[in-house]
Length: 596
Ligand code: GDP
Image (cartoon, rainbow, N blue to C red; front, top):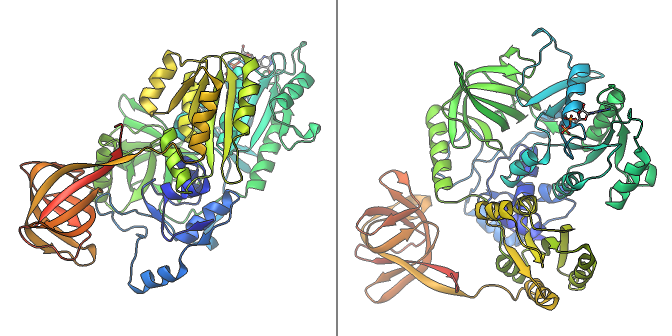
């Protein structure tokens, strides 16, 4: 497909029909930190497309040459401080010659009581090489083991909640997922959930068939049940590796390690140790005596004691680092988990950590993140109307659906009806289907995958409603099949797009014009009514004459970037217009959905 250069991360996700999270994950894996609203260059975008199995070509090569000639430079290189939160800080200059193989990061998932915790214990006890701290491994939320001189990092939080919560926030740290299935119990609801999540995240999986020591163990039944759920293990002609283990008897652990290393090898995991670190927080707590303590999984670069880091909405100077084996270390290389002490606040799991040049930069980034959070500027999951609008604009070619029905019997019929709506251009991707109430896990899967939830005679339960509130996932409930297929069919044709109407937000009077060079003109203004919003459309009037219909590119109160300025206040409005004069009036407006 054709992509512009540069391309906004959000737009790239739409063009490739994958979730924002997926793009961000690939970027992070390649050592590039960007949020959904930031731009990346074409080369990076085509690399991302390539990793997702798609091919990208450059749109408007001529335009690009012109832009280059004009000296446009969208990308900021590492080490340079961010200017407010308008411009991205990207690490697009990862030097391929400096990339070295890194350890895989593994998450263990599966049904309750199938032995996730026992398996992690077994792995730790048999495989942790460094026993200097008296044989007791520190609980820091992740552990490192060594097999055949190769490191493997395990995230200690079993289950898919943590995995999904992180994915919903755009962080993906897992390279390989182990699905634990008890041989005496088989594939259970949470096994299926785990499989759905791992699939949606496109993370390779290995199945550990556990409890094979039990007399009533039926590993073959497990394999069959996996096949029934479209997980084809090698023995059945598929490509998913399955290993028989007993966490209690400590058997099969070495085989499992071998297989993890094999899958890791195929993934060709690389990172550059010789650069500023970027990582993801996996756990955090307030500790008596030590203050804010967080475990970070360093994904690229080397994190060192003494460095200044920005972490989500907080920051700090690295006072001390503790390894998973409880040892004080002075630095942490890529794919290692360390406890970090010295943060000003408590970060959340999924927050990104990165090394910055100085305290001021760290503070600025934290404040910008705070503002973004307050403004609800996070990743937003699309409504069916929004997806339809994207389809109409040929930005996406897929509608992702989580489908729930009251009874198993109606599932097949509805799936069939939905699949009939597929066209050459657009198709429906059913991420999960099942009978029963719509639950929290359905909402979380949809949220992490930018999908809509469709219920046929199925209602959301209390947990689901709470999750809908938190995530804004679009849940569509139907009790008549043709209404369901009508809506989805309209959406696929791009006809469900909301009708947009203009909404005038407010006016400001220009009191002084400041030429800001390459950044355009800034109008020192006074808001006379309503409000002025950054990033919205604006008209510039001189008397009755419309001078320009343009955009508000920046908005400042004194030196601070702000999202909004109310009537009665002065502000600096950056306008994408050449001709601005004292006394002009700026009219700020937005296009909004008619119903809103
Ligand atoms: P989790 O909920 O998936 O973390 O499961 P646990 O690790 O807590 O294990 C649940 C129960 O299964 C515990 O009573 C374990 O002792 C038992 N268990 C776990 N692995 C094995 C195994 O390999 N063999 C047997 N016989 N029991 C196991």
